[in-house]
Image 1: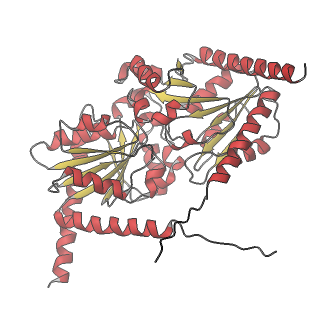
Image 2 (image 1 turned 120 degrees about the vertical axis):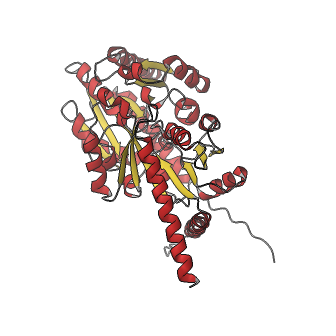
Image 3 (image 1 turned 90 degrees about the vertical axis):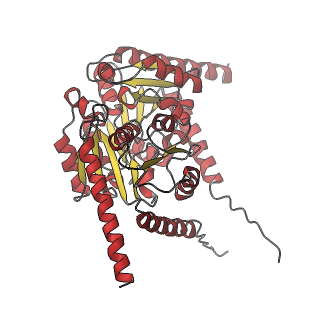
Length: 233
Length: 233
């Protein structure tokens, strides 16, 4: 009897197609002047609170919208609705967001006239790291109550991020957490990480965070213009 | 041209085999008097701290061991090593533990003469809910800093658990968290959930938690004896 090995390439084409769509959407967003930020963290690290504080800071000045992912319930969307346009993306149990759900959320949002589009991912410090959602910036939140040892324990999330926001800084006096140690640990994995320390409830650090996003958008727009000039001299 | 639909049953047999192994191991553990507890939570909710406090409480009285799962690093095993036998299970990036890794950990532990075997799962409030690790009890931790809205947002984890431990209760004065609201939300999903409130750093609630585990082990041993008497009258 001969042994037969069959390889079934189940995932390759699907992933390549999603990657292609993400790349195309990222370019479209950039041309329209919309900076897309993929927000990641453990459950309860403060993504929604940070977005509430961001929307309040920019009220009347900057146009932002949020797509918010959850396994179930629309609790986060309800919190954000008074502050900015928001659509809930319910994964029905899945542990992360993927491009097709983001596309459906964008259709439901209707308008695409935003300067900043935040995608608040499912609370999960593992699986969402593996999925490109057409973002220009990937930001991971680490709350001070989670412990300063987390970057090394969840390396892919920190390695694939552009910035880390250390949240709930008002609790620092009450927990064993060293901001310096957390940043050193994270930069061992990703040396170019930008870092911020915020307390969304008291607005601490929010201005610096918003300025970072504004600069990132300015850089994105400059890059689009340079590319346009190069293509059509 | 006719359309041909081919169904490839890739996962069915693998999952059934893992389920069968888990069931067999669960019976073996019960016969040996070892209560197995699968500990689940978000990253940084305090699983390791609770196990440290549990080991200190039982020192010289109860024999416990821990298998501790992480994507990378052996930081949690190093913390637990002074208190009890422990083996690190490194998933190499995977978001949850499965039976084969648990089996390898048991081989490395060597002895099987434990009254309590804790399996500290990867910090993730989603994926580990779908994997049976041969446990007799599934316990989910929810730290008060994560917010009392989490049970409804991560329903499968709470629906499949036997008990919820609300951790870091020393931080209650500093965070917007209602223990009652969290328990009501969790029991909407799983009405039979046992609930505990602990602060591992100050030993608050640890005695009650340990008594719960001792009673669960007593019940397990009684059930094994009743079964043995029925089989060999």
